[in-house]
Image (cartoon, rainbow, N blue to C red; front, side):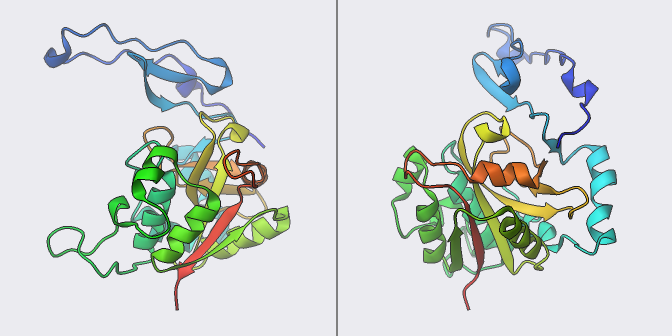
Length: 261
């Protein structure tokens, strides 16, 4: 399932004006499109990636008008979205999407870390996640789905790793987690390349579901420097998480997370 193309987003954007502090740097130019995964380059550095045709940016007005009213009309309200959106963050390192996803869910679930973050405040950030594996190794090489589940359990979350689900099972878990009033969360481990995106293995939570009329899920991408939050067909996401992780040799899958009792 695709979306009508956003003609405004396809036009070449004007070059940003240079501030006096950058006057001595080379002129900044955007690169031409690079196949279907085109993205902007500024002095050989990326400034976000363009969406694939199967994605719709959550920030688009059309997205808000067309999609947000439908779950409520169809009796599938998306209560968990508000808990996640209230704590939405960006991963601190290119490889720390798993850490950022766990932090986001811990704070959305209002779990007390039982130790200070800064000053008198107790709050989760990536540096506070410890347990199954050294943080230095995660920041260097990322983590597998099994390591993700282990680290979540070490930080007061119940975690059920699910691989090889049927489409109907995935749909059921998405429906339950997105309408759980912040009691249950679904973190997807998926292949970006399977969605036509830049990169490959990635973690992010699924925050909303439109119901069977549209079959779209909302991904709150924690790599916000690369992609904003976007809607994607549920079946496309299911296909992307049923891919093989070359590091572990296993299927990626998803993880259901909730507070420990």
